[in-house]
Structure formats: structure tokens, C-alpha cells
Length: 178
Image (cartoon, rainbow, N blue to C red; front, side, top):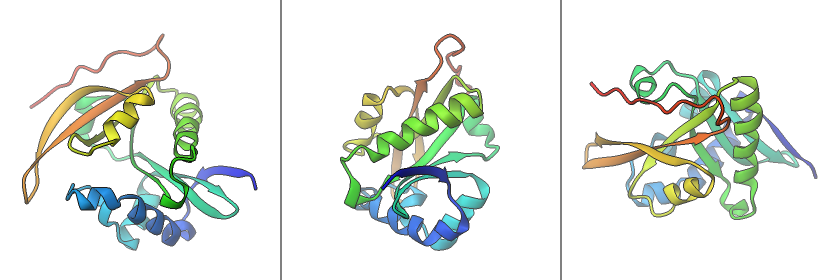
């Protein structure tokens, strides 16, 4: 069976919800308030419609997903002008088999670098998650900004990480805080 990379459609929503919710089990266990951890079918459908939700599938089964956030978010744009990815998830049945890396590589090269012509991409994660930031660092992402977010239960430390895809055109973001 060959692997296919493509944009998700609304027909993928139920399968995407299952993959996302299953993959975000650690996030829920740590009580990290990321929306993907509790994504309802409606939230998944909205994500597909409002953003670019990419999937890697094999034999009709969704193995991994990542979203290129298309929202005009001025606070995020003040942190970095580069494309922002979120909601990265790999089906737990396919963890540690390289599928997540393949999907991220494909999105970074074919979508961020070639389609959008952007020299870098960035993301955010909770600093207290035990393995996410180190995983992204192994993929070439570097921390460049920290932010404290107030949640109903506590303050959450968020680290923003950036990956340079085209060093010749990359300019370090100058974070503007208000």
C-alpha cells in the first residue's frame, strides 16, 4: 500500500477526530488545555474548513495529521511572520514508525517552502510536556520565544519553536510584545 499526502475533507472528519483524540491522550493526562485534546466532531470539521489540515493516509486509513493554521491572528503574527503549524497527531497504532516525520517533512518542503515560498515555519507547545519540545528539537526546531498563558486551573508555559527551511532567505523574528 502506498502512502498518500493530501488535504483533509469533511468526509475525513470522523476518522480525524479519532486519530487526534487518541494521539492527544498524554495532553489530557497532563491537563494541558490544548483544544485538540478534547476535539469534538464539530471542532474537527471547523478545523478542516477554516485551515489547511493535511493527512498522511495508507490504504484509506489516516495515519497522521498536521494543520497549517490560516487564521489572521495578530498576536501570533507579532511573534513570527512565518506559517504556523498546529494539531500534529499520529495514530497511536502507528507511533514510532516514522509516519509523523514523513508528514511533517512533506508539509515543510511541499507546502511551506514550495507552495507558500516561506523560508521558515513555527509552532508552539507546552513546556511541561515531557517529550514534545525535545522531539521538535530533534527535527530542527529551535525555541525562540516563551509565553505564559493563564488557564482556568493554572498558568501554562508555552514555548514557540521555529525551523529554518531556507537559510539564505530566513530573517530572525523580532518578537513584539504589547
